[in-house]
Image (cartoon, rainbow, N blue to C red; front, side):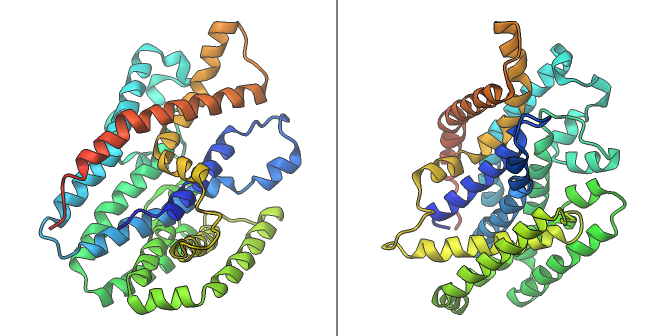
Length: 355
């Protein structure tokens, strides 16, 4: 699929939501109004899931008849995901053995490294009913996506288009039911089929977008999606204000619909090259292109930087000054990661073409 500046901006918004949620000081350091207005920023991951479902589903649908469908897809995904991920795991392994005092927990409580290498940490977190590795616990969502890539590539390759539509809709409906009957919150939150409403809604959007009549209808009736976005935003804002979110059951489906509408609107507006479009924004695009590095690196930086600051200055600074340092270091390191590691290896991955 052709890269979309508008979707890069949407990805940028998703990573901004996640970083604010994790970096915002608690314990009275942040005014209550700010905490209330950012209460739902944890859902940036839901936006990532919808966007990933659309983009990955779109690629697989476009090249489903290719002879090297599986090999090219997996090689390109590996080139995108593994280099930085494995470097982060290597650093984490080094800290386990040589700097355990920095990890705040004993070595015995950490998940085995093989679970991260095999992208099964989400299952172990759910089984233990706790997130044990604060440095890299955000990788649970990468595990969900990797599992989703394998499942979706098989699904699209083996099913007819009609059956694919049916299975996609069934999985969207099934996910809230699985969450309802889940034995605990982390099972509902961390397992792939329990989060399939967000991922498969993205696939549903890809199916509609690649259907000529569907795309024509969407672009022709853009005002419907403008107003539905506003309506869904108001509903989400109200429920957030009332603290009525039950994120482990119906909440994620509501967020999937809201973020799905957002992605759809971004796609439609992205087609209008000559019109003003707030999503054609260089800053948001910068965040979007570097979102993977920011996502993987922002938690380790948040946890380790206080030790570095204390070592140099003898004390930890005020919460907001520390947040400023976190942000600067995160953005600088992510920029270096993108230019030195991610972009060059992604380019190598694109030597493998679908035929």
